[in-house]
Image (tube, rainbow, N blue to C red; front, side):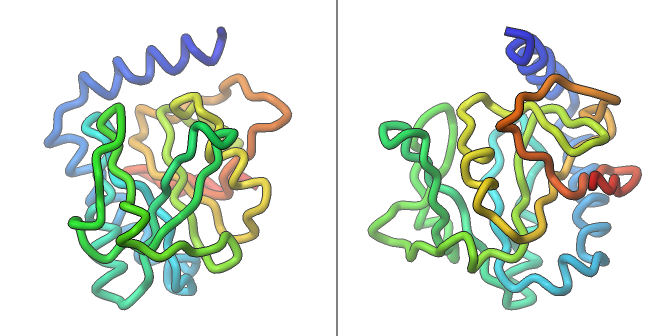
Length: 188
């Protein structure tokens, strides 16, 4: 119940931040990311297609394509134990709106990749703390996936989304870095 309250408040916060502020923050964050070694050394980038209230990830996707990096996006399987798989993403025609304004790859139009093929994963969330823990949307998809993931884990967030501490459980997996519009937090 405690996480649910954080989740609700975080969604309200994000709804009240203007689209222009989010776009400006996303551009600052993206430009910071592109200068990091973990970006430069990564060939396959896992990232989500943003929902309306989230920071846009399109600058990251477009830069990855420009640099000939492989972009992969998740598909969730709620009827298979909240399993999540990643598929190559090369064109918006490969997407479908599945539920809750979430865009995922169309399986028959995409090629699946394994977790060991991914170098860098951009983990979504609503609220983050300095230790890399996050409040997500509540399905546990990413925590299950990250248990078996050995690459670099990072999140992008506006400074307003980062707090000193949030509640977490033993099964929650923190990210290694959070890049905000003001700084990079190293979380390990």
